[in-house]
Length: 157
Image 1 (cartoon, rainbow, N blue to C red):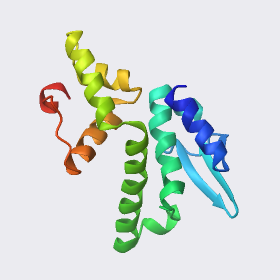
Image 2 (cartoon, helix red, strand yellow):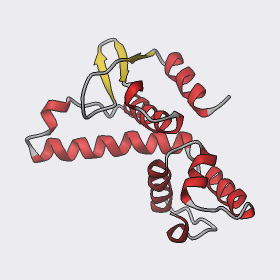
Image 3 (cartoon, rainbow, N blue to C red):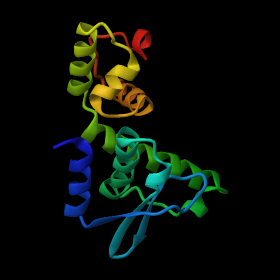
Image 4 (cartoon, one colour):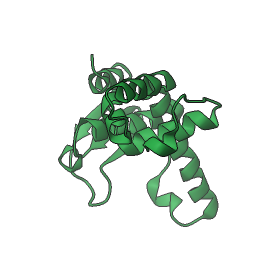
């Protein structure tokens, strides 16, 4: 089963309903917590492919899984609220990375691409099924957790 199918199944198993609807010119997805119901509004028309859908949707599911929920309007004015928003976004993103872009998977993809003589960041991201941006964040996050990769990301990314 591919990652995106797994993620949709995971959401369903955890009573998170995913609704496809355009709702903003600037956002492609958002959590909508109407207790007890949990929704993720996803604008599939604004998403450029499965890799971007996985990156966006896994982070939104991560908000529910880590309890990192906040009211968007309340985070624009106060410095503390903005700080909490940044913290909650990082918690959700880190959950997504831990569940959908492991260090072992990145290493395996980098090694396969090195063997194929095409070891650039785009090829590695494609092999991992994620966007380059998501892969960069994953490498950075795993490094902060003490993971040492066998490849030099600066020459790849």
